[in-house]
Amino acid sequence: MKRIATIILNRNLPKVTDKLYDHLMLYDADLSDIYVVEAGSDIERLSEHVTWHADWPEAKEHGLRYSRGMNYGLSKLWEEDKFKNYDAFFLLTNDTEFLARPTIEPLMSILDQHPRVGILSPCSERWGERLLLKNQKTKYFWFIHNNAYLLKREFIESIMNTDQPDHIHFVFDGTNFRGYGTESELIAKAYANDWAAAITSEVWANENESHLLNKADLIKTEGYEKNLTLYLDEGRMWLRNKYGFNSRWSMQQYVKSFYDNFFEFHPEFKSFRI
Image (tube, rainbow, N blue to C red; front, side, top):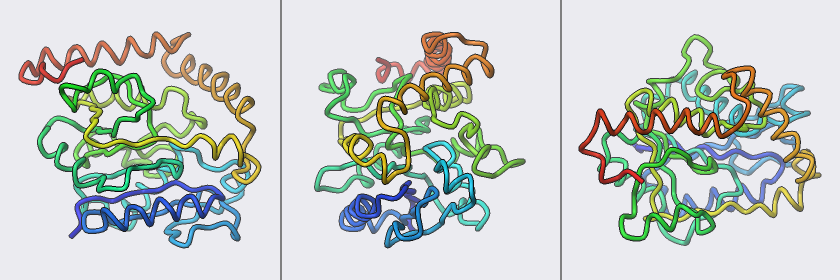
């Protein structure tokens, strides 16, 4: 039985998705089953490896974005009674790119070595966090960008909404459509429930933003600048309505307070603190 379920999110970029799928099959097939979520993709632009197609009218018009797309994939595994077959779930946007070497095996090895890590992310060569990971390659953080998350099943089970296991509510808050603050909310839930979130430079991953910049018409999303404006405006409204915060800084301080408390309860992990 394979330990990992990898979920790749696609919207109308089948070649990009198939390239990522083929890379994982080449280097990580022994450890992971791979599932492809089509987030409202046109029927003629489905991946060769499509698993589930979100083809209802709203999904076809607007897509699912990260939160709803990953909720959809995870909830389908739950619905199909496959969820408990896996030790962890690797959630990938299709614009994620890895080096030509195994990705999942070293990540899973790290997860096994860190019993309280519920969220693990490869580092990016473009992130400032890489500077903190030169001597010690894995450390616990209170912010992680969300294009490649390895989530431990027990962590997901501690926060998931089994009363509404659907694409809106299952793990992420799908009412926050564009995802502003999604990563902070997930990490806050981790530390609040006695789990840590880590980044490792043992594995590198980069996000190829050229797809959004150059293929927005195919993805059927707004151009980069308009998308960024809507991401900020809609996200700030979600943040204020749900948490009463008027700035992202307030949300980050909220997460940081749980982060600090984690090490008070687990002094044995202080060597991994940034």
